[in-house]
Image (cartoon, rainbow, N blue to C red; front, side):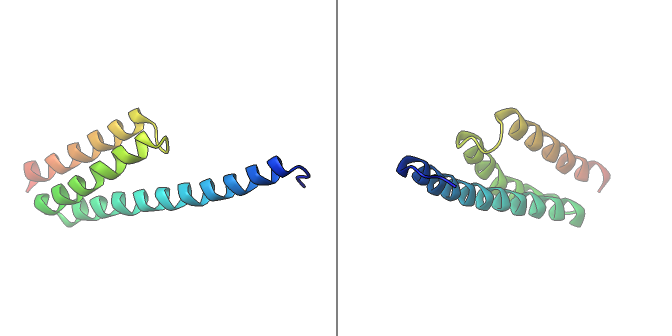
Length: 90
């Protein structure tokens, strides 16, 4: 257990950051699931609107250091590719 005041403060700060990061990660997963469901649903318009709400959330996560920049680009690219494929088949 921490003895010094500075160590105790660091523990408090870490707990706060961890809670914030967990909430943000959960929020991101929710947005991604909405896009996945829209893609599975088959309507391109719904999928596009879900993706347009996901995009700024992902960008914000990358600027906050929650997700790597390239991971965001990869995720958006793959999702938009799948959305484009809906019109090709439907």
